[in-house]
Image (tube, rainbow, N blue to C red):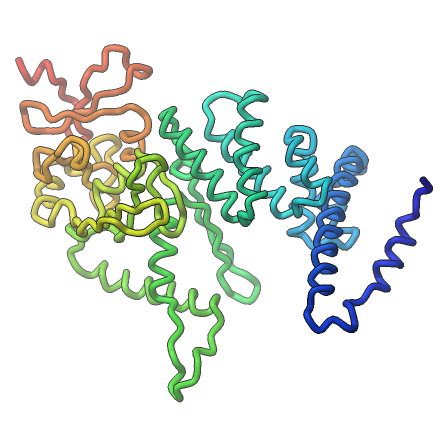
Length: 414
């Protein structure tokens, strides 16, 4: 069988046109299906050729992504092809289906990124067997018609379940990874950059979305603003509202309301509407100091039960906790930076919302308590004491709150 030069194939493809006489559209539909397969084959060939040229690009002091961009590939597509090229040998089933024209590059990218997300959440390196199991799960989703976004959501759910099983802190909850910066451009505009936790992102997206709804123009015509412009206007409105709120006593104000969707069968983790699955630890932390609505859903996401909003730790109790603790009991952060934590969790242990069951914790220390094995107990002096995990203190000797850090529980008892 002679090999047809790619240039001749390209010339033939360029000359193709949709069927001229096709009243039912059937011939056009069949041709379109073939074109999509050709597109998938082209995606896979670009990926394999990129993998082959990667060593050459590295020796030339460039990257596969920059090489593709130089050749005229759009930056987003170049990043996708370069990423897929690194997984050709590790995800053999996905590679095989891509080579058979069954998967486009976007779907392959969703699978490879999904496996990467799962691997990051796993406390130990994925074995070949385990990697194949997760790959088969995501590949089955893809071949069943799932979109790349749905595949990524499935991978996130698997990764969240892994985190709950191992007790590790996932990247989406790790406050140490948070960044927020701004740059003033030459035009005196502000370029904002942020990388924040899932919960903070959920709050931001929900509040921006609520305030970015299109509104009619004064003459009744549709809103002329683009979606981006509406979101910027919503951000400015939020800043104005925050400035007004800062002028009043907000010590008792609840946190941003969040909806928690809880599967009735308990098989999958709870999710938030905007950002997806969350760990059990995150769900517990949210319920400590927020206004939340718990919604029990069935397998088709139909609500079966709506929990009422719970505004936890009303103003008078929050003020009493602040008077007693002064600051975050772990690090000394000011009370304006703190949440009120239930010592005995209110949903799992029927913990009361009372002075004796609350303490001040800043966001980072709150995460440590829920993810890193720290515990809190109320002493007979009616003050909170911190119990460190065994890897910090094998004897787990109680530590006093920050404002009483020179005390010891034994000395107090004596």
